[in-house]
Every structure is written in structure tokens, then in C-alpha cells.
Amino acid sequence: MAINIVVGGQYGDEGKGKIISYLALEDKPEVVARGGGGPNAGHTVEYKAKKYKIRLVPSGFVYKEAKLVIGPGVLIDPEVFLEEIKNFEVEGRCFVDRMATIIEPKHKEEDASSEIAKKIGTTKSGIGPATAHRALRDAKLAYQEERLGPYLTDCWKIVNSTSNLLVEGSQGFMLSNLHGTYPYCTAKDVSASAICSEIGLGPKKVDNVIMVIKSYTTRVGSGPLEGEISPEQAKKLGMDEYGTVTGRQRRVNPNLIWQELKKAVIVNSATFLALTKLDVKYPQAKGLRDFQKLPKKAQDFVFEIEKKLNVPVALIGTGPDAQDIIDRRKELGIKK
Ligand code: GTP
Ligand code: IMP
Ligand code: MG
Image (cartoon, rainbow, N blue to C red; front, side):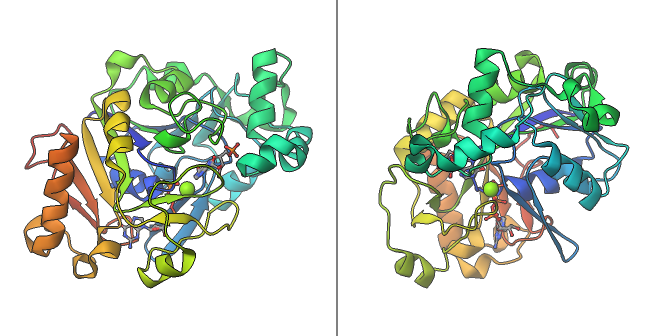
């Protein structure tokens, strides 16, 4: 029984979907709440030989007993939402806050054609224009969208009345509008505090802030990326990846960017890290669930991260399935 929040520590696509789905199956939260962004997010969840690509419905849907709720800070594209309700068979247990902003077709058109959106290389999901209209206070809200009638709720009531909650952030710290690489960033802050605010969860309630980092760095879209290698080099290293929402090839730095991660740990007040794709960097780690069995080089990489960032690495991804994880929480004395 804990209140856990999961955020991205790099440029998004750290593998949050996989970590969240593992935590949902393992910890059995009463509620999984989604904050952050909107359908610009693309989370991939692999479970029992099935692969799901999710943009709005919480990735914790794989745990069938959980109630799923999307906060008022999340931008809702009704088509995407309704499609996912059907595809992921979550009718009757997935709700959206009545005060959430609706992404309208005109927002998507503007996001696909404006000069600034092209310069940034946005996901064309309408995020910037819809956020701008929310700030101008002429945006349409979820309660004004007829098709969403059966799904409306008050998120703040749900998230503040349980102590068994998994909160799901989206994007990654370096894409934060406030703390990232502005103007090459998304339209909102995506740090843990912002995610709490977006679902109406009081900040003192959080037990663990879990910051997800991948064993190397990727970025999709324009903007600075220190230590970037060519797509061909990335492919040779098995680090070539393609965007979940846009299909674009992700840019790669085969290493971690320590300065950026140090800032991300502090601003998010990360209590522990989840490290994904260790098996991509060290193929002998594939499928392992026991830290002691990891090759020495992989163990040393984990220790290096803990030393440099001063936060324990409590979860380690060793394969694509939700269950391909080394869970060190018990040995590290972390409340589950
Ligand atoms: P988020 O946006 O942070 O949720 O990440 P993502 O889901 O966008 O990343 P992506 O779409 O690239 O999907 C990641 C893929 O890598 C999925 O198929 C995951 O199952 C898989 N994956 C996640 N963690 C690991 C890991 O530790 N090892 C391996 N080999 N694959 C992983
Ligand atoms: P927008 O959020 O669609 O406006 O896109 C702004 C920038 O953030 C672009 O560089 C996108 O590629 C990037 N971005 C937004 N959401 C995600 C995400 O979930 N993963 C990775 N990159 C993202
Ligand atoms: Mg993604």
C-alpha cells in the first residue's frame, strides 16, 4: 500500500509504459491515474505475448482490478480516448476528469502546419495549440463533449481517497516546458510536482517518486542532444528505435548524460530509479530477474549510476515483457 508516481528522467520513451505495467501487476493498486501531456505520449506495454501501444488510457490497465482515471491536466483527444477504451477493453473502469481540455481538430491542424511546430518537430497531436487555448480560457472542456458523458468523473476525489495509488507521468524531464530544452520541448511542465497538480493529488501524499531512465539516451524531434551518434552507428549498437506515435527514428547518444540526470533527480525529488533496457547495453542480462546473476560489467554500470546520482536503482529492465524485471525494492527497504 503506497502512493507511487512514475516520471521520465530523459527525453521521453524511457520505457515508462513497461515499468508502470510491471508495478500495476506486482503492487495491485486500487487506482492508476494518468497525468502529463496528452496523446503526444506513446507508451508500449508488452504482456503475455501481446504488444499494446497506448496514448491516453493509463498503462496500468493490464492489472484488471484497478480503476483507471485521467486527470484534468491531461489533454484529451476524444477519438483517441474512445478508440482506446474499446481496444483495451476498459469500458466501465476508465474515467476522465470533467475539467480536462479537449483537443479539437483545429488544434491538430495548427500543430501540423505552423512554423514553430515544424521547427520543434512536434507529434502533431494538437498539444501546443490546445494548451494555449486553455491558458486563454476559451478551450472546450471534457464536460462539454457529449461523447465523453458516460466517462466523466472528479479525479481529485478518487486520487485523494486511496493510499494504494499508482500515478503515471508522461514525456521526460528534458522535454519540460520549464526545465527542459525550451523551445524544443512540450507545452507543459512534466516533472513530478506538475504531474501531481495535473491529477489534483496533494504533494505530501507521495511515498515514492520513481524516475525512469533508459540505459542510453534517445530523443525524437528537434533540439539539442549531447553526444549524438549517426543512425547507422545506433543500429550497429542495437539502439535504433522508432517513435510510438510518429514512427520517426529516434536520435541516440549511447551513454547517459550525467549533468541532465542530476538536475532531473533533484527537481523530481526522485526517491529511486527504474533503469530500462539494461539488456540492450549488456545482452547477457537478457531476461534475468536476479541482480546477482547480472554480468559484472552490468552490475558496475548500476553502481556507477547510484554513485553519480546518489539515488538507488531499485528496478531494472532486462527485456520487453512487463515481467522482465529485477526488483530490488525489498532488499533496499523501499515501501511497496
Ligand atoms: P515510454 O514512452 O516511456 O512509455 O516508453 P515507450 O513505451 O515509448 O518506449 P518504446 O515505444 O520505444 O517501447 C519500448 C519498447 O521497449 C517496448 O516494446 C518495451 O516493451 C521495450 N522495453 C521496455 N523496457 C525494456 C527493457 O528493459 N529491455 C528491453 N529489451 N526492452 C524493453
Ligand atoms: P509535442 O508535445 O507534440 O508538442 O512535441 C514537442 C516535442 O516533444 C517534440 O520534440 C516531440 O517529439 C517531443 N515529445 C512529446 N511527447 C513525447 C513523448 O511522449 N515521447 C518522446 N518525445 C515526445
Ligand atoms: Mg513513448
